[in-house]
Length: 144
Length: 479
Image (tube, rainbow over all chains, first blue to last red):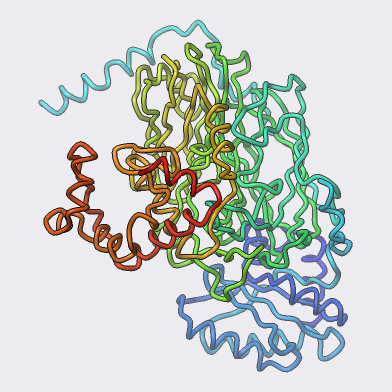
């Protein structure tokens, strides 16, 4: 049931902003945890990148950022080295393989870990396809 | 009782104005404004070709005349590129329209802006392997009255945002990227101006119009020591940024840029300068040496008028139109009268002999882009240009002090070091120093309280000057 709900939320998120929260906040939070090269690499492997708002008390400290990143990275199904955490914008992202175990189990596991710190996650967006055609070739800039 | 009396006096003009009959219609009647813009469109279609397009755009300081079309198509794509914020300082910037500041949009009240922007921060730059990683960007027009949640959304590389809005108020309005961290996006170059004329135009006529945009850069040498075309790369210094300690404060994106390329004017002309202080963190006391602002329209709106002003104080994202006469031939110095800012590059000239000065530079074979590549020499050049040009020239002859061209041939490094460290001591102990004081009308060189590193930078710059082809001839003039 929970997995179905998450999937439904993901689909809503993919339809555009404003479905889950105010678009401005969603976009801001996504931008703060956005790593373009990570996304490109993930999509090349048919993996996806999920963005979340972190709800709860967050103190801006390097230690907490490390702890959160460690929690994400150690969660089964999260691609190694893909956790991104922005304490300033209270958001995070990671890449994962949608085939195994998929986003639902990852979220459940993460929610459990974060609850210890009084934190919880709100799904913002899942990127599972490139936003546009590949960047133009170098020649596109020449001759301007 | 006394407090009530003072309050009554202070309020009386307001009360009288409020009770009096009003015959003229309110120019700002919300009923006549367009406050229902259509929803924005977000797509995955990428713009190709020019990064900036639209007949209402001016790319430099000179403001083009108003395009009479009631609908202005404006395209400003975002890019990442290396720009030169000061001679030799190649900075990793983020842009609107592939330039810093972004192009100026000119329109009038009632016009509709039809805006589109593709995030092209992932596109490579010819010949440059180093730019900032692609990232999300957005557009925030201060000239618009729209929902930020709809129009100002951040978009990913490859996405395009389109929206429309109608201009309801006259003024000079900032535009900027509003994606977190906003401070970093603005400090990296993502800003520009929208000039909105009153519906019936300005109440005065002028001979020339310019746009001057003040902003700060917070640059540090790339920790990875990367180079661009042989010159060191500079990147955003986050620590300085958060502490509001800029390394460069500039007009129109370049340290002392309009000193090297003054804005032309003629004696007897009336000028209108549209001034915007972008910040992101410093105020501007905008002043022009040699004239008085006949009119100042704060925020660029003629309803906010002051007369006969010397300086206009602008906070971050504040603006003003200043109008003034050029009384006689000369170079009129635009400056941020917070002189700490001016010393970081917020200086420009409006000159009746702008073209002549450019020719003179060519005559001396000093190309406008000539600059040292050694970081110490670059710092020395920046320091020299901001602190020393009032009294010294390079290859242009004597001023209050000697011409610097050839100084490393006339003096040893040791002598220069001691002189720069403590000129007053040298006047006691050194015969050459005393002779120089006499030659220059007993005007002493002030002690600039320079540290050893700064002195080393100056001397490296002087050596670079003397290694240039033009310096040999100039050295003779400067003796």
